[in-house]
Image (cartoon, rainbow, N blue to C red; front, side):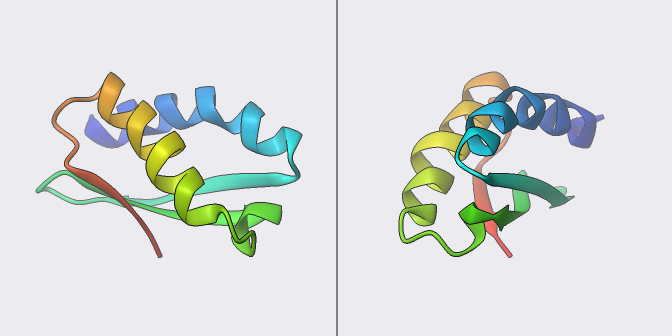
Amino acid sequence: MLKEKVEKALEEIRPNLMADGGNVELVDVTEDGIVKVRLTGACGHCPMSAQTLKMGIERKIKEKIPEIKSVEQV
């Protein structure tokens, strides 16, 4: 169920990433609330990807799903 909630939150974030030629792929959600994602396209090698991950993706997911502790790039 948690994985579905995260995927739904990512669906809301994707249009912004796609506008810049990137995307995000959900890899896993651990039992202890860690979301693992893979940034793809332009986001995969952008120098700002760490900021996008923490200030954009992680912030939005934690806002919607408080039980998530962090989002990590794999």
